[in-house]
Length: 308
Image 1: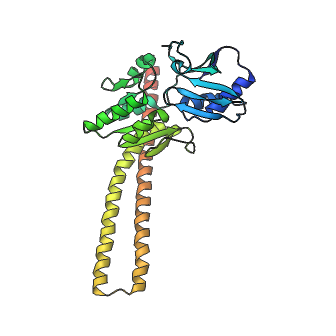
Image 2: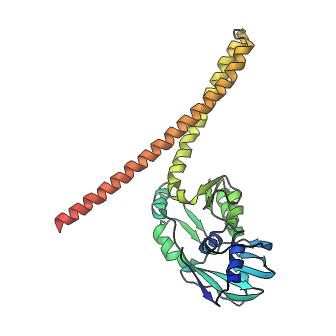
């Protein structure tokens, strides 16, 4: 993501304030600005606040610092409709300017959407304006529902409405703006650049570098359900056989005490081995598919050269 600043010239003290404030936020824009200021050392922030989908504020070295949307910073600033995202910056109520962040989609997004759209209904809920509509409509199929300028409450209500319609909802989000919707959905997945950093309450955390493999993960989880069912079946068989021997009085207490942990370990070993085998098979399938695609492209290129 390319980042630049437009407005009054920022001092070292300004950069320190921005770095310090963004360190406390998990929002993708805050993280991007924080990473952009590599050579700046952050300082202590007092009275830190984060208003979902609006911005963050706090006191650094006695100065009130605000970072966020135009509406959050000042009533007199109008929202831009450009393809870039603007994060405004103010000190003690005085607007200094804004950071401009050019939007970049995650690697593998187009292929991922193509795979997901063949099996699931897709919905996009974003707090940004519709400046990206044209680009998103090229990636998502016409049947997808794209909603812009969505507040955290709008997202939550939309998820609840889908559930009322009897749909099973899996939501993917990347910040506090999505916290309520993630918790309300049947399955909530939070995307994080650092899995050890704070993330909203959810069922799973997906490292951002693995985002393009989401389809494979979903396929693995479906097959894992069968592993769970087989594990229950094996467990019932263990207990049924054990109950038979217990009633007959054939096994001594010592032997029974040894068999109990062995049965538990065998179930754990079964689930671990089968899950790993499924994951490896899926990985092999992906590699085969990728190799076929490469071969097809190479063949098409060779054919083109021959025709020319």
